[in-house]
Length: 489
Image 1 (cartoon, rainbow, N blue to C red):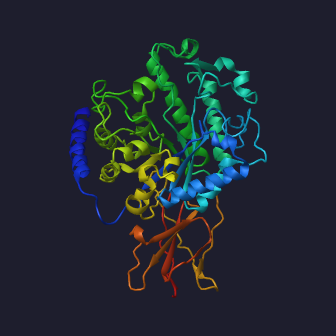
Image 2: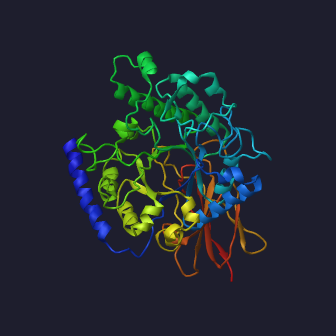
């Protein structure tokens, strides 16, 4: 089996190499593609300095910039350090939003706000959490409102001067699951997202101080295997929770870009960098094989021909080792634009079978047009609107009814009914508006005909033509088109 996998990887590498040397294609862009952007809040002091009104204007401006660049999914960091950019039942308000864990004044809920604003723009919103980190520097202290920490300091570990949940303690897994449950029960998120921080990145000469928990819970298990098992149990528990509460909410993880090197495992990649499996105790492929995650976004933040971790090697490796899970590639904007590698990297991802899109780090660099990234995406690489991928393992049943469209009396506004959500995968939550010229066929497979995605019950036309509308359910299955409506010149 491992030998077969290596042959497949070699074949894919050859195919990817051909794509990487091909000229930029002229023609139809994908209609289905994950086009995500990470908006981090850790180390972002701007949220703390701005007023509520200024923060809300900032978020709107970010979303507008991202939408213009073709982004259709935002991964917003709502739990940077065991604290919250939302009204949490378990943890204090984030140190990056307010002083000392106090509620913002005037009171507002950034997660609820960005969900509404993203959905109004036809974009998905994934709530991004860091599971174990409590502080990110030696100087930081834990807010007095963090009742769990102050009541159970023995459940935490200080490593490199920073504080972490000890992943080996079952009660710690329970509280993290409760935090996720709180979010999905109270917020209409499209996804729950974890980043690459599981056990902390190793520091030379420092041991992670989990002797007590290992002695109590490790039994006769090898410590490395026990640590991996601790993370596995958390991932499985989050998957089980979501499946039971809101099965349409996708659970995704953005691991460090190397699972294992081939020198450590014949199944690994031809690389020589830090390994998820051995250093962070994250057995990412196991999670994909067991369908505990719905997507993976490996962080391939390196140059095409990086000496230790070449993108040209890792992209086909992840494609060959998707284990049936959807793969989106995490792209570092500054590196990609500095090296002039944008076109080649996107050609490689689009030539792949299991890779269904990309996610841009950080999203703020798009709004800043770092290296011309926003211009390149908007005019060339993401010039047409794309719908996010479907998730057939959750549901493949399209909405049964087409939207019943009507033309308002003003002659330019198309309306339709938005069914009341029933708390089901089949809820119709977004609508796709297509426009065609009078002499063209109605072709909803061509994304060039998509002019808007919205959660509203109407669209006001800005140009004459023939319009149809489709409905998307919670996992992006699309209905048949509505009856055509003609907007006259």
